[in-house]
Length: 113
Length: 112
Image 1 (spheres, rainbow over the protein chains, first blue to last red):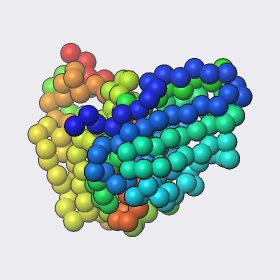
Image 2 (spheres, rainbow over the protein chains, first blue to last red; image 1 turned 135 degrees about the vertical axis):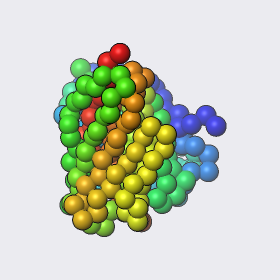
Image 3 (cartoon, rainbow over the protein chains, first blue to last red; image 1 turned 45 degrees about the vertical axis):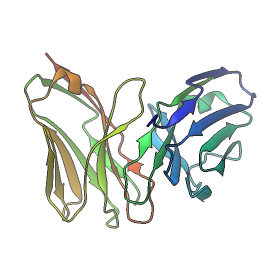
Image 4 (spheres, rainbow over the protein chains, first blue to last red; image 1 turned 60 degrees about the vertical axis):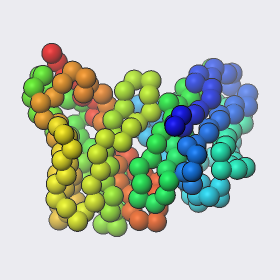
């Protein structure tokens, strides 16, 4: 079991550029989550999917953020245009079902200059 | 209602001592309370979890104590070791939601 795989591990971009973060969940897990971690705000839920369908996107900061899950083995989080305040570590996690543990990837550290 | 409040923000414990981290919640619908451990450069990993039908759960050196009436739960690390130095997060959710609400984290340092 390779665990949740995120790419890239690090991303440095300039303000205004488009950023795409990628996630491959654990095979067989039917729920996928995107979290953002900052010193100021801790771990914040951005959006989660169940069976590839977005269930709760109330944590998505604004229209600049979008997430997709075209199939059970892949999800993307896109920021367009990026801003310095988007700098954070973005985590993807998956779980096999309700009431089960979330399995996190090692995150993507995003720096927007 | 979705908040989980965690304290302390940081904690320094001597090797062999007991580390105690506390969390409180508001939402009485919460029925799953996990603790996660995070090392630098890694994602959080599940350490131990409890449901409100029991008041305590122990796994090795790690124990969760749960007080339903006070809406509080805590993590106790017995015989703390330098390898336990990490950031610990409490979390909560309720049946049907799946997504976890996390506390703000506690940075634990265990000194040799």
